[in-house]
Structures are given as structure tokens and as C-alpha cells.
Length: 211
Ligand SMILES: [Zn+2]
Ligand SMILES: [Zn+2]
Image (cartoon, rainbow, N blue to C red):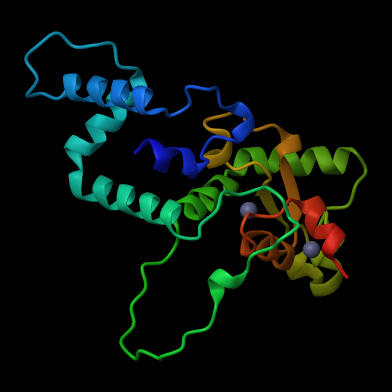
């Protein structure tokens, strides 16, 4: 478990101390969790609020939570690398072609991390504030990478459309206050390209690559 959590990089390397998810700290957390179980009769240790909430969710919705845990684990164990990082070696190979077509193939779609990322990007309030700040600064509501402007290309139907991307996603930063500077305006193509690479590119990195 310690090795897995160290590989997961939900927390950036720079924010880790020596004890980060060490076998000892994992053992302490497991002990905290076990003393919070309803079947435990001894004196409970101090578990934080998040610990209680997570355990409560597992007790209330075991199937859903176990499935989510399995997907997170599979994501860490497979090729799903954390967002943001060295763009020197872009890995898009995770999308490689299928050798043997399977007519009845079914997919479980949407990595939990990416789904959560998109969900945050639909926060309307912060989006409105970001757009207002961009306009107040006299800047165009256009893609920060390629300068694409939806209204110019598509006319009225495209006017005002832009995608707002969280440059430092929640699963890398941990729970955090999003500042407007953490948001980038992107066209749909650039947004997709950022998420296609593993790790995710920053807008600057994509701009450098734009040929
Ligand atoms: Zn663009
Ligand atoms: Zn995004």
C-alpha cells in the first residue's frame, strides 16, 4: 500500500515530506480507520474529518466505493500518470490501436480523475469570474494556446464560447482554493490535446509544441 500510494502522485513530489505515505504512516492510518469501525469496541483514536467521511461512505455505499477504489488503483498501476510534468517525452501510446477487433467489446468509460477534472471545470461561478477578469483586462475570450476565437469562426453560435481548464487539477493539488490564475481558456482542440498526453501538458508546453 505504501509503494502504491507513493507511485500515485495525487500529491506533488515537492509537497511530500520524508514520512510521506511511509509504511509506518499507512499503518497508523489503517489503525485509525479500524478503530472507527462500528464493530470496534475499544477507545477510538483521533481520526480526522476526512477519515470519518471516507469510512462512512465505504460503510454506506460499499459497492460504489470499492469500485471507485479499484479504478483508482488500476489507474495508478496502469499507464495513467499524474497530470502536469516533464513534457519532454510525451506519451500518447496509451491510445494504441486494437490488434484483434472484438464486436461485443464494452468499455467502462471515464477515468475517475478525468471525470472529476471535467466536473470541476463546469463550476459556473468561477468560470464567470474568469471570463469577467479576462474581459476586464482587455484580453480576447480566445484560446490561450492557439488564439482560436469561436465567434470569429462560427459567428453568433460560437460567440462567447470557450473552455475553462484547471491547470493544476484537484487530484494533483489536493483540496485547494482555485484562483483565477489556475484557470486557462482553451479551445476544444487544445483542451483535448492537453489531456491526451500523459502526463497532461501545461498550456505553455502545448504552445511550445504548436507547429
Ligand atoms: Zn487552441
Ligand atoms: Zn481540462
